[in-house]
Image (cartoon, rainbow, N blue to C red):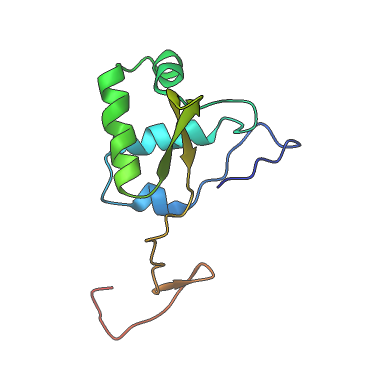
Length: 118
């Protein structure tokens, strides 16, 4: 889960993993990046809020959320009150549990390999 630094508000830091992940579309990647710009302590991620903020259709938001969920970047949380479903909110995961770091890169230094195609 992402921590939000309340002293910094004009930029967002995002791991490269989500930007380079070939398993998600550019649209889902964009939604993830947009969601990362919001303070999780003051902004609740819901499909309705996302449609209002992005101008995208509810169907498109649902597809993008499903993509992010399937790849481990988003977790759905069902809200219940007195046993009744009261909605769904979302939690972003910056590095999914299935993330395997690229061993070719260590501390931003490219490690040389025997393979000349690298």
